[in-house]
Image (cartoon, rainbow, N blue to C red; front, side):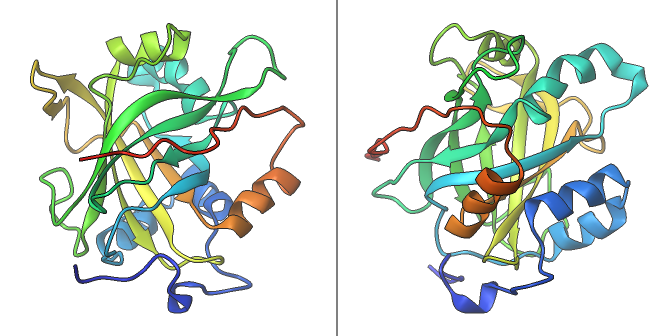
Length: 234
């Protein structure tokens, strides 16, 4: 497979480089043209990332659909910490979980793995026609692991993610877009409006990003870790 390795030192830009938190501030500042420029000119990778990712996100969906926006803000805002990608014997296909606070009502409840997804590395996707690199999709057709409120919500208000890699401070950072829509009985997603995003989100699977999250972007909550990570056999 052509593309960069995730540990390629040329993808690490060092001090002043992009982090998930800097990207979130760009989204909050409505620098959408700059984010689209990054998204459309990403790096082609030679496999999916693996492990724990620090994450940050900013919603886009506005007042015309405020109820949905408010309901999902807890997943993409203060209660969401990132994602987990499982190792797989096929570097282009895997599964994962989101790192989300167990209770949306208790401010210091633990972060737990929930809201499962299937993920693939694809050469292209119709929701991202201008992307020049390959890209990663996350399919939430069957999100439930346990009857968590967050999983029940995403079973009804259905979403789909597409992300690309760019150079970052610690290594590759993923710039992602989330759409609202509907899954059919075969798990295929149709966006409600391909030109309208629910949110931007950003992931960094590098150890230094995970460490920065724990040291500078945390409030003391415990986290339930999966150790070892489940292995996906395809």
